Image (cartoon, rainbow, N blue to C red; front, side, top):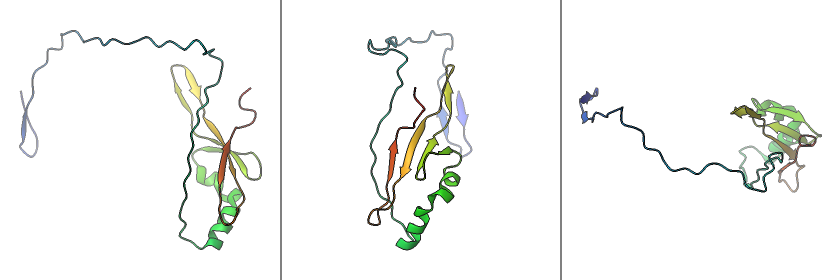
Length: 131
C-alpha cells in the first residue's frame, strides 16, 4: 500500500493481519504490601527551593507582597483558596478521579513576613482535613 503526502513524499506501509492474536506480556498482579491497611492516607513529600528576580523596585515589590490578601485568591484562580490565617491559605490543587475514587489534593501555604528583604512561603498541613 502506498500513501502520498502533500509534499509528494511516499512511504511504503505493510499490511497487518488484524486477526493475529495479541501478544500477552507477563505482568505481576498489583498486590498491596503487608503493611498497607487501606485506611491510612498516602502522604506525598518533596523539597523545593529557589528564588525569583523582580523587575520592580524593592519598595514596590515589598508593598505588593505585604498586601497579598488583596491578590492571592484572585491570582490562584482557577484553584480554590480558603483563608486560614492572616498569612495562611489552603490551596486546592484540583479535583481528580478515576475508578470510582475522587481526590482533591490540598496544600497549606503560609506567606511569611519579610526578613531582611527576603520573602518566603512555607507549606504545611491543612488542619481538620485528615481525621
